Structure formats: structure tokens, C-alpha cells
Length: 170
Image (cartoon, rainbow, N blue to C red; front, side):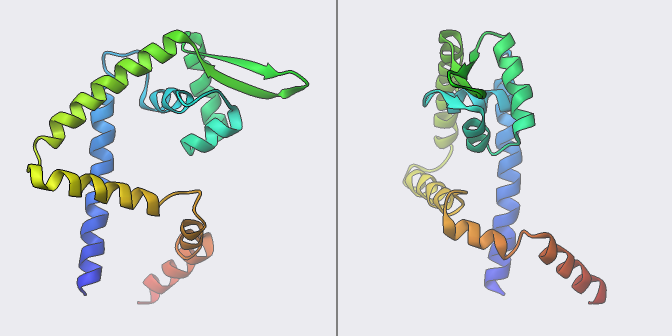
């Protein structure tokens, strides 16, 4: 029973945290010409140029969604797309200097906001909070086989249908 209650509290905290962080990001971007998804694309490209497939994977979105994001960023002059020589189907995306500057400005503002938020937590709990978030992130890594195996136990259509049938009976 204790584990079930803890799981319920964690679920409520994670979903609310996710919505509030998303809301906070949208607030920070009000004065900026990009969306949250576009910001994620710029952030991913700060690590270096990427193929469209790699960028979609890094952002955990479908490639058709990414195409719309990339088109808008390209029109704004924040990124450029080029075709790989020898493989015209392979599109590579890279930041422009303007894109790099706008992301860096957003990043610096976000760091300041996070610092301000952390100051609201008692000093002796700040390290624990950040370490707990990092630990949880390492567990939900989509690249991890352990995480992939966990998804197979909860996130398939068969399991969803099976649980729905149980709920109707019970």
C-alpha cells in the first residue's frame, strides 16, 4: 500500500511538474520569436550539426513534426539545411550564428530562472533535489535497454486493451 501511494504521489508530482515547466518555458519565450519545440531543436543543434533523423530522435518527435519546426527556424535564419553530397535524400541541419546567439541568450535566461527557483528550496535540500532529478532521468533514458524493457510491460496496445477489459469486468 505504501508503494502504491508513493507511486500515485510521484505520478501527480511528475505530471504537474511537466506542465508547469512547459508553462514556464512558454512564459520565457513570449518575448522571443520561437516556440518551446523550436527551442529544443536549437538546444539539440548546439551540440553540433545533425541529420533530420538524428534530430527527430534526439527531440523524441516524429519526423513530419520536425520538418515543420525546421522550416520555420530556417525562415527565421536560425538554422540552415543542406543535402549531403552523394546522398541527396540525407538532409543535415546546423545552427547559424544567429541561431547560436538566440539559443545562448535563452539558455542564460533559463539558468538565471532555475537559480532563482533553487534559491526557494532550503540550501541543504538543493543538492538532493537536483541529484534525485538526475537519477530519475538516468532511469527513463530512451536509449537504455532496461527502460525499453519496462515500456514493453506497460505501454503496448495489447496491455492497454487487456487492462481495459479487466476494468470493465471488475
